[in-house]
Amino acid sequence: MADPKKLFIKTYGCQMNVYDSERMAEAMGGAGYVETQSPDDADMILLNTCHIREKAAEKVYSELGRFRSLKDEKPDLKIGVAGCVAQAEGEEIMRRQPLVDMVVGPQSYHRLPQMEAKAREGKKALDTDFPLDDKFETLKNRPKAKRGPTAFLTVQEGCDKFCAFCVVPYTRGAEVSRPATRILDEARDLVERGVREITLLGQNVNAYHGEGPDGNDWSLARLVWALNDIDGLERIRFTTSHPNDMDDELIAAHGTCEKLMPYLHLPVQSGSDRILKRMNRKHTAEEYIRLIERIREARPDILMSGDFIVGFPEETEADFQATMDLIEEVKYGYAFSFKYSTRPGTPAAERAQLDEDVKSERLYRLQERITHHQRAIQDAMVGREVSVLFEKPGRLDGQMVGKSEYLHAVHVAESGLNPGDLARVRIIESGSNSLSGQVIGQGGS
Ligand code: SAH
Ligand code: SF4
Ligand code: F3S
Image (cartoon, rainbow, N blue to C red):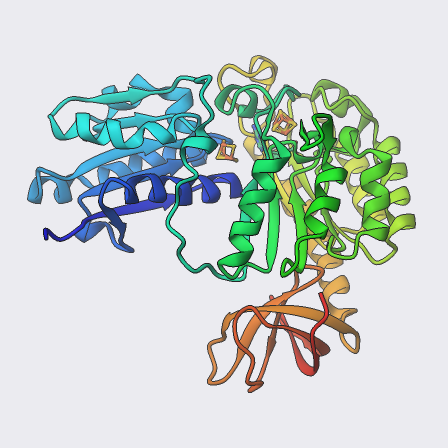
């Protein structure tokens, strides 16, 4: 039998791209490909790209340039661009970089094997449709390979919110929720293959409203409760949520659903009502803060995380101060912050842009405060007992590393534990990016 062909996938952007890359590897597995960790011995290279900020999008072209010598050495090498840059720039990519054989948008991955066959005939293949057939359905015939303890599972895709700065509604299309039965089947399958923790993914995951087994529309809370009943699944998380879709049921689940972890990523972007309005976020800073209060009433120890954009068009120093005030009030355990990046085709791109220096200086100040809170929250874990799901060996001999329920990285010395084990751990030290602790008992969640 001939050696299998090798596929190298490089993934940029959000967790949904990580999930999609796994699906692409499975689709190409059906066409005789195995994954390789290096582009050098690959027969096919796929870049799964992100379009969210200018830098992310430009990276694709510099990365492609680096493959020129590989293609010179191996003319049979096929190069594909997938993901959100593929969706947004389509043919433009082939024009700008003739090395590219295939361009495939996020809704068309199930058609990759046919595209590869076309590329093998020496033709260029482009597919950026939003097809009616369900890409998840055609992708589900996966091999039953063993998995690590944690996995992503896409439940909802696309966005109808149209925040003024954001490309996602254009690159991922309209909101679509997968039927609950398919999600539950996929979750059971993951658990059979060793998964203990599932993170449900969606661009607006809490807007989930898929068809339930009873024929009614299920909310995300219903889905989480159904997942809670799966034996062997120990932890449930979901991301990313929009504040306006946090309904009462979901807030309550944070207090009562034992497998739902006390961590919530709830981006707000800005603390200024004037800017929130211009961003088309459709809520005020006060409403967001009240919402977090209600979530904390349901689950007092929940760790909050968020996203921020600084330097949105027309943001004044006073607007920025309002964001800093909101940060002081909420005290995030994690946060992702970005300088506003102008995205062609979005409404905010048409408005007066701020100086790069002003953006950089605000980002610096904001990150300084965020880091301060993050540090304080992490340090306050010392002395506490947490549950840790172990994922892999650490750098030192015998060391194991995993995540606490609050998503802090925790390592323990010599413990006899294996990846996939859950244990109760007493935190003894807070390091720069992780905690260290001592195992005090097996089990937990
Ligand atoms: N659906 C999620 C976010 C998806 S994009 C939500 O509604 O929060 C992830 C993050 O990238 C956003 O939360 C935002 O902070 C950032 N982002 C999106 N567009 C951006 C832009 N044009 N410039 C800078 N940051 C941006
Ligand atoms: Fe983008 Fe806003 Fe949709 Fe999030 S909710 S994906 S920021 S448009
Ligand atoms: Fe990027 Fe697309 Fe995700 S633009 S953040 S890869 S949805």
